[in-house]
Length: 182
Image 1 (cartoon, helix red, strand yellow):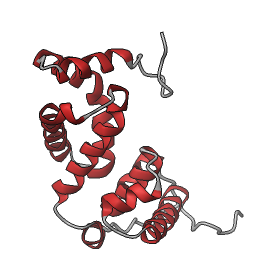
Image 2 (tube, one colour):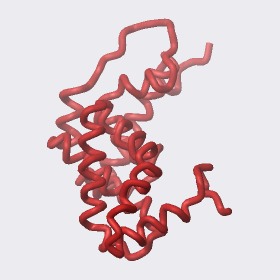
Image 3 (cartoon, one colour):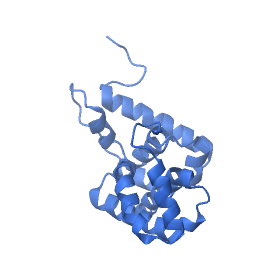
Image 4 (cartoon, one colour):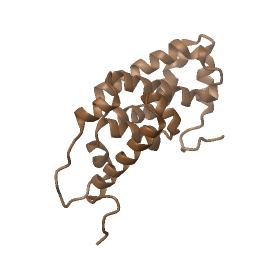
């Protein structure tokens, strides 16, 4: 058996369910969902940070998969295709531009000598920072794809990533990036 790079179960059953769905076998949807919903949940939650919105985004994404599975030419490309659908659903669910979300949800951390764990630090970031970091660092999307999804120039993506990484570093370590180590 060949396992995928991220140490999950072999992908061949997934490809089989995709082929079955493409041939009109609706009963293949349930095992496909069971196999993919854990990773889908993590992707959506990294963007939305709200359980109800994550459930809505996943439901919408799986409906889109079911309705459009015939458009997927290569079953082995399912993960990339599914992630694009899910990210689009998450961003549409917000119904605001990432800049509006950033301005609205920016959270000022409380001054503290205590360092946060990485999950706490990530949750304290604005939705815009979580989105851009999630797309790049979690989903490993290239800058060009992020720019396309967010409908901004690549240079804006790079600037947002730079700033989001700095804010994440400051939240996580309690000191600004490049600050003294003493």
